[in-house]
Structure formats: C-alpha cells, structure tokens
Length: 187
Ligand code: DGI
Ligand code: FE
Ligand code: FE
Ligand code: FE
Image 1: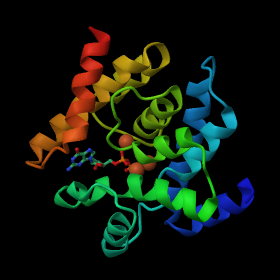
Image 2: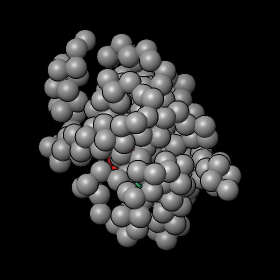
Image 3: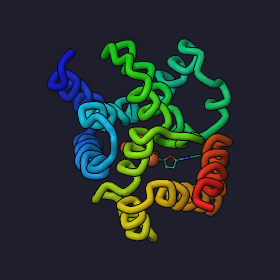
Image 4: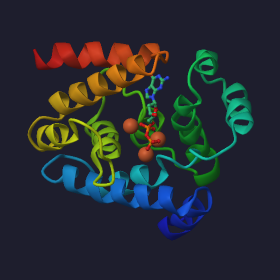
C-alpha cells in the first residue's frame, strides 16, 4: 500500500471539510515535529489516518468495537470517542500498518493517554490547534505547543473537560486520567 492509495481512500471516507481538516492536521503536525526526534513519514501517515472512521455510522463503529475486543466501556460514552480506537484497528487491517506508535497516535488522538510518545503528542496537539480550529483560549495552546508540549496537552485537556462539563456531558475516564498525569508532569 502506498501513501497515494491511503490518501485517496481516506478522502473517500469523509466530506470535503473533514478532509481539509485532515490536511491541516498533517501540516500542523509536520511543523510541530520540527526539532523532535520523530520520523516525518510516520507523522504524515498518522495525521492522514487519524479521522479515517470519523464519519462511519455509529452501528458500524459499534460492531468494530465488539469485533476487535476494544473496551466495551467506550459504548457507555460519547460516540465521538469511538473513531480513534476503531481507526487504529482499521489502519492495521486495511492498510497493513503494523507500527505501534502510528497505531497508538490514531487510537489515542481524542483522549490522549499517560506517557504519550512524541508522535502521539504531535498528532493530539495538531488535531487540537490546526488553523481551522477556533475557540476561546486556543491561541494560548498554540503558543504553548511550540515551547512545551506537555503544558499544551494539559491545557487542551483542561479545556475539553471544562467544555464537556458545561455541556453536562460525561467525561471518559481516560481523558481525566490523562489530564491528571500531565498535571503531574508539568508541576
Ligand atoms: O475528530 P476531531 O473532531 O478532529 O477531534 P477529536 O477526535 O479530538 O474529537 C473531539 C470531540 O470529542 C469533541 O467534540 C469532544 C469529544 N470528547 C473528547 N473527549 C471526550 C469527549 N466527549 C466525551 N463525552 N468525553 C470525553 O472524555
Ligand atoms: Fe478525531
Ligand atoms: Fe483531539
Ligand atoms: Fe481530527
């Protein structure tokens, strides 16, 4: 499988606006990767594939969660949390991607997790700060991402958790666990 085929297939999974987000995540991730010890080809692949399943119907995502023995707990939380873990399984099965770091970057791009690798942090942050994103406090996170990724991760998780609480939505435990972990890291 070459990158061109993966790009074409990914484009076909989503509306144009989401594909444009994907390209901005790739460009932002490549910029964040500068000066980090990461393989740029891995950055590009993970960025291209991170939202592969974002527009799959809930039933299809649910079936994949069961079929692949992903945490059933996911089903008790927002559907927004499903496309990362499922996307990692699909990347492995359909695109023969075996690199665990790429798969983890896709798998954890919505929640993060304690002890993320540089690649995982880059994809998580690029998804959050790509130039198409606009919400209160984003410029602060954009600045932090250039100098201290852990600080930027903490701030983006704090923002997401606050946003979920304001909307009276459940917070997935891993999101909270990740937030607590990065709070410790920056103290
Ligand atoms: O797929 P994207 O929109 O590019 O970004 P994403 O994969 O980071 O998804 C963001 C969405 O996921 C956003 O609407 C907030 C939601 N989300 C993130 N963490 C949690 C969550 N929703 C719930 N209910 N619980 C979480 O812990
Ligand atoms: Fe996503
Ligand atoms: Fe995100
Ligand atoms: Fe995304």
